[in-house]
Length: 486
Image (cartoon, rainbow, N blue to C red; front, side, top):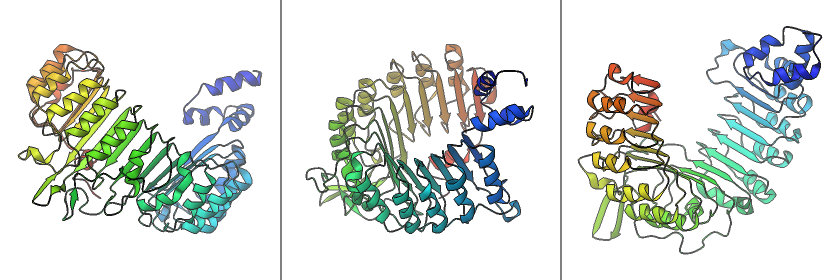
């Protein structure tokens, strides 16, 4: 192998994607070791990075052209050795001149002075800080000023970041295209108004407030005005017409409007995710639909809230009604993915969900829906499945806690023209009889059955080319239905 041309060896290495295989191959000869080291542009290391500073220095010497580095100490215990500290972080500026993408997760030994070392990484484009307990706004400001190429910033579970001078600076600089902030208790969604002109270039934005104990199920004592229109006046003077991907989760848009106004300003939006946002109403979706004709994906995770448009009447329901569905059906004709979840809604009280099956089917029949997820959709039954079976583009369907869907619904959906992936979770009205209907159709590539008490493994195992079956609820499913931990 030593006699092979370097260009050929390089091509061979380019075709190998497994890190384990690359590591093994590099031990075959000194030439392969050198070529593989020069070619490797990404590494991910964790608790095994003992004597972290020395180990990281060695890695950067071994792989001089690293562009992407992820350091993840999740699950770390003292017995694993020392974590990467401030001194270790300085290695990136001195030994990793090509670094453009850095992720630091659960790095508990790094504080502001260490983060300030990254200010010398002039090529850094993307920075992700996940559960960095010692980082404050001071360290983040150093990065904002020093990393002049920064275009993507993710902050997750950074408890000590509070003041927003860094945000104001990045807004004035206008270089960020991606900003995601999640579970940082010192940052409020109103703070992002200070991002100012930075919104013009931003293409992806996400904000999730840290969850409270009763966020999902308790509708609270506040009664919201279902007729209030937050978009009738331009309260905040900023533009976000480049925004394509927007996610807002667990924020309160009352009494201050805050990020709610973004829904009326993002004309290029393609992907929208609203999770348990309080005090939204039909006017928000109607306004959004009128300007977002390119919308391709919408996720609405809704919980119970109190609404009133009359001082003498109050109702407890989810945020939106059929008026929102009609607006989407009329204006967003490119919609391909819909994910609807209704948490805390009782099947015995159908009025708790603002949508009806009639309104839902108008949307489904107006758009080329390829992926559909319904969680606890009490309004959806076998007649809905019958209508859904005529959807010419539907490829993937996931039903969670849809108790009104029975074996008859399975018989209808089995004949959906393009359906290839079906997931049923906690659908207790579906039995082996319904699953047999799917087997007879022989259309499915993938079938997932989870915690459907009347469906057996024996009935499911021959239905599709790939079958996943579990009689128990996974932790992920418990969280999805609002019963998981916080």
